[in-house]
Length: 189
Image (cartoon, helix red, strand yellow):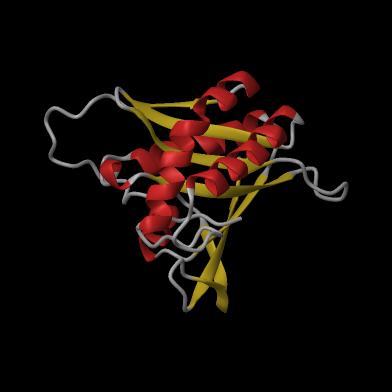
């Protein structure tokens, strides 16, 4: 349920920046997006994000991960969102909606990733808002996430997420060494 490698949610000073759109992907769209999603994951891991993978991450492993995600979309267990501009996929986030029988009201926000070329353009904030809307549309009333990124923590707090606590030495950074993770939740109204 990692969520790192995202922008600050602030608009940059770029006057010619292409418009960014965020959308939920159908199964067919998810298959077609795998190359762009792979590029984003590779960039985030290369940039040091703790998102379940060690560096160096090879393309085949990253594509295999996205193939599993697409299978989850096909089975109705995941909702996959992307942020795109004229150059392609800038970022992504998932909602893991397939939960145990005693948790039908909950989803995990997972793999919040924004390519380094798209930082500070509001992509992370747009993905978060769209994920929350998708969660509501799926009948979820509670979202949960974790992050190892202080920048992500600030974004989540600005978006009204509640910090629960920190677990020390939860995972490894891509190049080694322990990192803590911070858990958040948001009740959807």
